[in-house]
Every structure is written in structure tokens, then in C-alpha cells.
Image 1 (tube, rainbow, N blue to C red):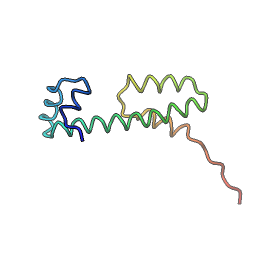
Image 2: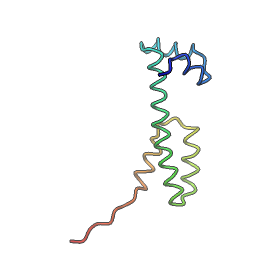
Image 3: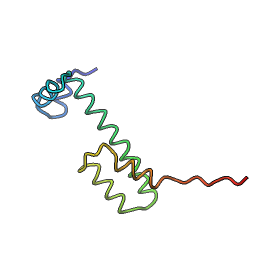
Image 4: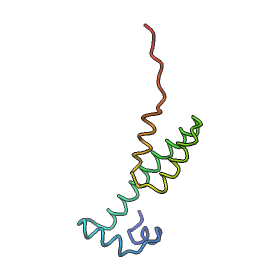
Length: 96
């Protein structure tokens, strides 16, 4: 497992930022980095699914909105989750 200093240098950030946040929250620097990585993976999974579905359904406007949302908005994937709920595949009802 990588230590915090190698993770920070790999991210190209100053160690002062992570240390300041960790001290403010009362947690270790490693915890701050792990939380950031978990949030990043969470967001990329949801936006990846939503972008894939928008391409599959040929919804160009949604593709652009979701693609820009991936890089511009920091909403933790909420826009992507809303899109997936609104445009989910409806299963046909069975006849009895």
C-alpha cells in the first residue's frame, strides 16, 4: 500500500493543502486522500453510466450536458443519477 507522501506527489498537489485539511477535520492525511479518491471513483462511475446510456439512446444534448458536468460541476454524480432515473429502461408489464 502506498504511503501518503507518494500519493500526494503523484497527484501533483502541495502537501500543505492535504495537511491543512486533515488538521482542520482532525483526521490523518491518508484519510483525506482516500476520501477524495473514493468520491472521484463514485462520480466517474455514475457519469460513465449516464454518458453511456445517453450515447446508446442517441440523446446528444444529454451527452453534452453530462460530459461537461463530469469536468465542470462538482455535484458528486447527482446529475448523472437523476438522468439515469428519468431515462431508465421501462420493463413491459406482464399480461395475466
